[in-house]
Image (cartoon, rainbow, N blue to C red):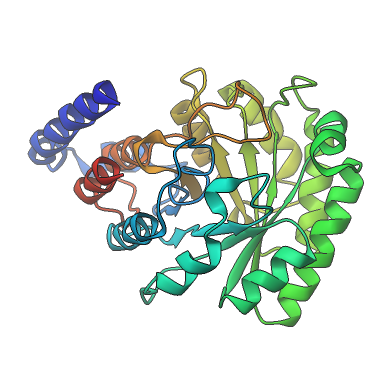
Length: 315
């Protein structure tokens, strides 16, 4: 939107102006500020998949491919490229094979794709995917309405896909969707989310992402969730995915950073929304906002703030 663009440009100016001042901070103050925070964070960019999947106007494959190239050039460690799902359920992703065929993969960048079942996995594999993401959900109602199964069965299905991917030498990420709130049931029990996170890790997922799919989490609920999950899945195998429905995303990310989580999901221009979660699932946290915060904390991400702004303006 115009407001988001104007705000981003103001932050770009502030980002440039504050650089000399940051260099004046004393080493002692910097060490105190960063004592409990990771020195480096990996940005897992979602703009091309989660960012676009809920857009009503179909974006052509050429535009998606150019966006993916820009997201890789800006320095994101991972660019989730597309999803191999039902075109009837998610029409925006119907061109997944064409997008995969057109992307020139940059060395050092991962290009995972979302798959929900073995059929989707086989399509992704045939299209040349080297890494995938699978999904589980702790909400009984969400699982029944969208997957026609129980939460435990979502883990079992994800495990089946993960086993096939691991056998093919592919990396697997596991999402726990609705980790902090469900559009049908409200807040989720941290213990139930931890069960699924542990199950995904045991199934062969190299990374487990706790997704606040509808953006209802707060730093308090994020803290409670991480205290439950971390004894079972270590911080170096966790990521967080925060939507910004109530303006809590950056605060929730900062809370996760203090617990040692160093992989952050984001989407340029704050694009995104889950087509299965109803109108409560607003956009993802903007990559520009996340990088601005990380730069201010002195945390390396490898992402160029200026190029993130440009990619957001492009799309």
